[in-house]
Length: 421
Image 1 (cartoon, rainbow, N blue to C red):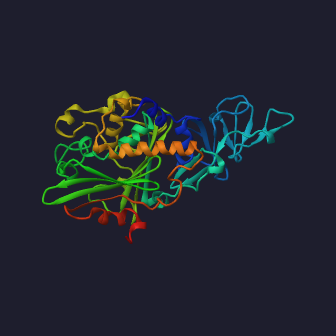
Image 2 (spheres, rainbow, N blue to C red; image 1 turned 180 degrees about the horizontal axis):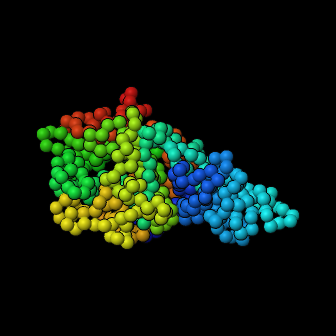
Image 3 (cartoon, rainbow, N blue to C red; image 1 turned 120 degrees about the vertical axis):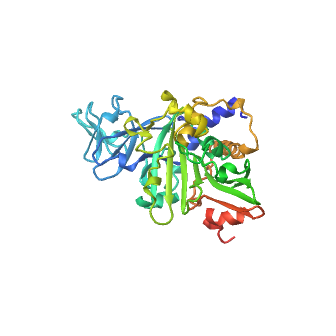
């Protein structure tokens, strides 16, 4: 368990907070590129407790500005996107993508050159707009995850709002022991999707967790004993501060899936879900997965700020009849199930009431790494995970003989840098 002071340290992300200062040192996935049209309407977004407005200028460049106009403090979301700038509709002040004021319609003697509002650097990678909100002198190289380098036909990316603090969303995602319980199907042909009742993920023993700390975070493995002298090993990566790479699922080859859990503010999280393949094209069903709870077709209300269709207001549309005979939870979609249990913990879970065990090793380690990163940044240093030595990582799983060296079997595929070892 954590003390209340430690819990506050790790969960509060607003400007000037220790964790907020730390998270601002990383590139943040903020918007999907298709949300911004050249000379199209600006888009509001909220990151780390700051209200921002993004727009794509006539020349295609992306600007991310403070939402509030520095003249009379109304919202620039009402603004006109025109001629490589965003013009406030109140008095006609216009700003370019760097935040520089370039015109003042209401001023007979303009002083636009003296006005520059808060703006943040933005880059586009993998069909996603990334924003850097930290000190300019500490800006790291742009993100270059393996999935961002995949072609459009090789990847799928969605984003959805989760109504709880970022840390409990992250901790729920990296917890491998819950998956074959919360997400299991109760029979072989359920009406709702779930991990099949005869899958080794379900039939194997409770997992023994092994963890290898690295300079970007850690690798971790859930090792489940099977009958007939076999073991099922599922290997993941955790990349500081909010990224997980996970295996694509039993029988799926040449793919890695994953998440970024980005704080919108202290009480809401932007969950990014990415899927990519190393060979050929990604199947359409994977690019917009119908069983995950992250589908743009069925699960995400884009017009309502990327809110979840199944949410707290409708009890995640739980089906109690299905819960008796079809799936363990009765909730449609594995990530909807995750959001339900995490959101019901409250906006920020009280970790002083926890009782953690060996199956929670990844969660315990994550908290230690985040706390260390906060102290490092406060002391003037760089947090881990800012270099490019983790971008080619992949997740892997396999059923192996019980006496096999599973690290030797999985590591060459999980980390190309280790393939010669």
